[in-house]
Length: 410
Image (cartoon, rainbow, N blue to C red; front, side):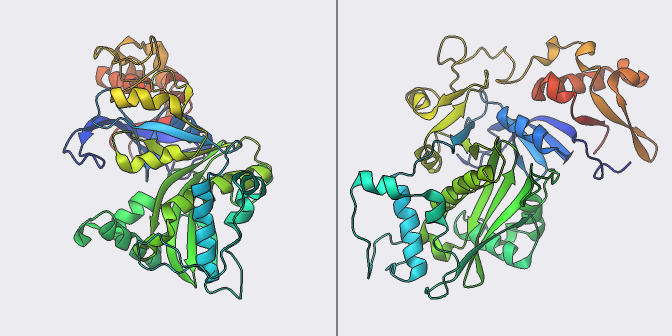
């Protein structure tokens, strides 16, 4: 049976490991639990995300929030209650005027404006009343008489030379990566490969659920790509890359507003559950992450209870403590003898706790699916039993019984 052709979620674990941190730059200080996903249902993945997991290609990871150098909190925005701020409306307006040709930046990174027909100023109350996010975000598209022709195309994740060239330019200029370290295979593994299966939406409208590239074209040239996972309850931003030549457009902030609008449009299309926009992780110690709190109302997920608390409630605590949980008696620094935040104590699990986990066991040239309780060679194999207990502790006992676990070498 091919591991990639099944409709089931199929994973195998790497366990805990240290790695270099992409946020603080310190070597071997980022600590997380990792899994490889061959296949994932969209429902299983969104449950993992709500438990603090994220994906990079097919690699799934959950930070050890107490021991990692830069604790990463899952953040989400309630799009049903979002109201664009004055500065966010200005980003869209500036973008639209650039496409129209009525705003000309004086430099690549210049935020100053030269406007020929600036709209009449309105009071704050009036501006808030007339502003419609979805209408405003689409104003820039499809105007033959405008200076620039702008369009956005949503398509399944794919490899193209144009996308890779954009990725390389973005990584080398924005993230200062040496060109020799930016490869086509690395791009594919990071931003194209996905374990998510494409699944139909409630009304079979496009796009369905799965992994997509939202491509921005200016006069036919690819200038940005948003890598998105569209799931039943939310849209998850995986990555965003853009042509540095267009930094003056504030494309990072603009893309977030377009993705918030996407959530609203998909919900209006019959996906009633789709209420949230996930912007990845929020890391308070990383200044570049602070902008995520500007989209309101946003909430952070408690590492232990998995309850969502208003973003504003976290800030005073994160100013005082690197690791914060509102479990027990407010902000705590948990005893190191406790299991990793949000995980079970693997040592406390019994054989019965893992007996219902479906597994693939190698049988010569193929894998055979059965349950742990039905595989006699597992019951006496303490090493494998420990591995399965650690897996169940990491993802939770309920989710562990929904995903097939591969026993053996990947």
